[in-house]
Image 1 (tube, rainbow, N blue to C red):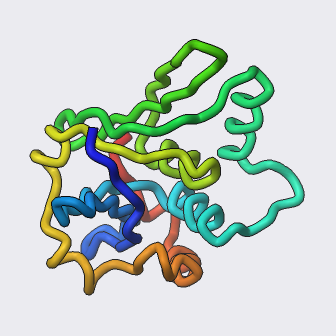
Image 2 (cartoon, rainbow, N blue to C red):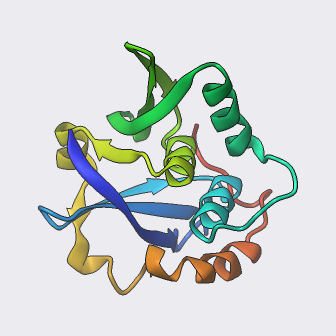
Image 3 (cartoon, rainbow, N blue to C red):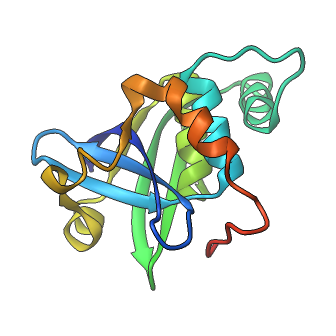
Length: 164
């Protein structure tokens, strides 16, 4: 697996769908993953440490894992099939490691909340990775995550569809 970090967020020029950009700093490749507006907002809220009076869905999952004795260790973008990315949560409970299939957008939303490691399979990066040089001027970096909310608030969830 290749260590990744959240580089930033962009919008698809045609469909205006949010795109989370994961970055492999070692090879200077980016991994653009199209995600839903709600997941993008969840990631943005977690990066900005916005408090909520009650647990949101991703917080509920983390609370559930912890109540059952588990801890999210890492997330892995494991493969890509016909343009759709697949990911797994790597949960540790006692001496047991549990792998749970999930969408990459949900995995990233959970990783941000728990500061879990993010990684991608080398073959995924080989197939879908792109040079970071072309992305830097089109992406709102994670260091400016407070700007993500402005970008996302203008999206209409009914207009933004993506393949699950």
